Length: 571
Image (cartoon, rainbow, N blue to C red):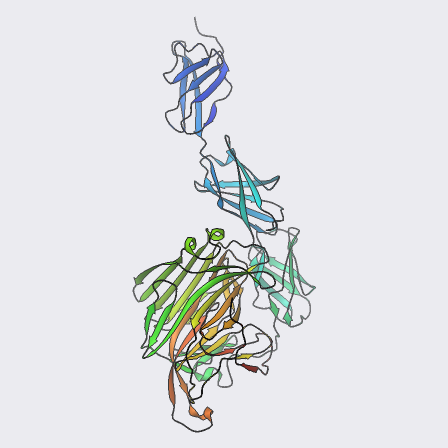
């Protein structure tokens, strides 16, 4: 007689922890007299226990082999693990992307993620090591910890993650007093309708827009100087005053008088691009090829030797500044891992900071990555950086500094990389006169050029006002922080960024100094000079320091020389 008993299961999909037994409930399941080998009766007819041999799978179990009471079941092991320490959220104009570190072995549909009290995190994407999801229409700040809840079939995991609000307007190549079409480069997130832009309260009509670029038009003139830019997207407003309107009528003022660039280069975009064999701000110095580069094996710095002269530099710290430019967090950069690689004519020295053994706030920045590359080639190279292209002469030393994952205390805070060198000893200029520390200054604290005299050697630095912030060109502020009797410090200021990159380089030159400037005619005196061509900022310092501060957006102004530096020593 055929079997007509209705055998049913309450469910056929089960989630387990490792190899825990699976309890199977249903009706008319029998008495366990003729079952599969790994199936055990707990309660007659209603509850059995199945012991899986694998962490996940599908199989057919039999409640009675002789009567053919067979059912197919599927099971999965819920090994979900959420590591909030290495997780973070990035918010741009109200839309946040959460990146949660851990172990997520189940398909996306079995996870539910909540941000804060009750904001769902949708569009979940999973790999074995992280879960990524999107939070919509949420104003994220650093004012309170960000709670995240991850629910899986068997687990409910809570964590507190760091937030990064990366809405930004980073740069504009055509922000001039003429107004008209203006390109604004920054981080604008997922494109949304209804984008609004204003510059100094003047409406800027949006003509084009994507995640990193806005093209808008100002109908009228703009006043020169610092400006306030407001961008509203998705109902969320971002405001910045770090950019400035330049005077469209200002002629190039960084190429000297005619012939521009001493006749040894071309004046491009108001700055000199030197011909092969020449360098310096006005291309008036010859490159010196007879040099030796000695990298420091314990910290990212180097000694550049030429004849009997040498130049040393190093990284001192990374500082977090608040809105008033007060240092609220400083990471002293000590303890580096070092290795060398050679690829043809290019030699690379790589330094990686061991944050666990640094001396300041190490616990807060355990997820921080700081990498410094020193590169030297025997051949001339052309390398792009921050949307522009730079030429590096043979035997120059190019430095790339990358800071990734700084844990900011506030959305208003920024970073500053501080570099240092020794500045001891009496300095004599080419006229035989003892020099005092001096600065050529105007009302701006930003500078592009730095001149240093040490032990009869002249060091020259060129500071470009660019850096890379989260993959986008950004403006940077270069400043002299302090000069003491033994050390000198210069800082590169960056906007808030998760991944920040600066890109300096060093070359040795022959600087021709003629005696006519001493008031009497003398023979030509040759000094060895080092040039630092910097995509962000770097320290080149000694007792004799002349900082050529360039006010970017105004006509040439009379500068005042402030001799005998009165800067207080850093604490």
